Length: 328
Image (cartoon, rainbow, N blue to C red; front, side):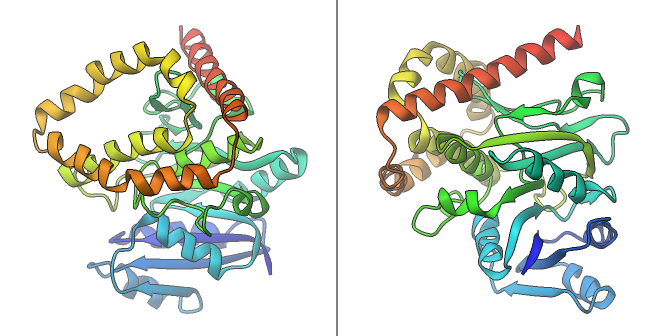
């Protein structure tokens, strides 16, 4: 057993994945195990990486099973106390893992922790300082594209974070597993970490942001250009995460803000890509019955769901207000 398991899911990551692996192997914290999972890449990233790192363990999938399934496979394949989901386009600074381990030691209620992710290509810009999921039901990546500044240098509780460099406490992950799934495999890709964060919050766990743990994120290296396929996954998963985790009473209370956001931000995407008008509802209703079953399996009372969701959304709204005030 290793204390920290690092799982990197590869799909056509090119040469950049080697930089990622070097940054993991050069960590000051040494009690780690590394597992690479390839989702049927069509480039030479697997061949080239195995030539340079022949001792690393790989799982080679015959088809692209998606982000969620790949990371669930990783969790089953590596025995660890803490689990780092790492994108192949992320470079860690040498003490990234050490800093996050300290967070878990200082905060026993922390289920997961993220560092400060800076943009690899835009010097001095934030890529992510956590995630906020606000009362209008929009998911905001805190700081995305903004200049790094003092507000981002404060350690704090955040509602969640992106999966590109997130460390989890294994005990917490299995506490919220549904039918053995940690990441919801019906999501395939996109928003799955928001769903996991939400389920962890519903069980009383917290997420911590640690700004002294720094990493650099290239972003979108293996996604390709935004197309109707990826947009369909992203949008239908936004609605599935609500169906699975939200409180009906609280959702109805904030319905005006939700509708306003749909008109101002989501409707333009449908108008630009008319195919979404069919694809998103079809894919949503196709999966919805399975998501409702998983909601029931959470075994959380309506009262507890409403109380914990109120705390979840209040924290998100407060962080957005604070960040805007600080920016002025």
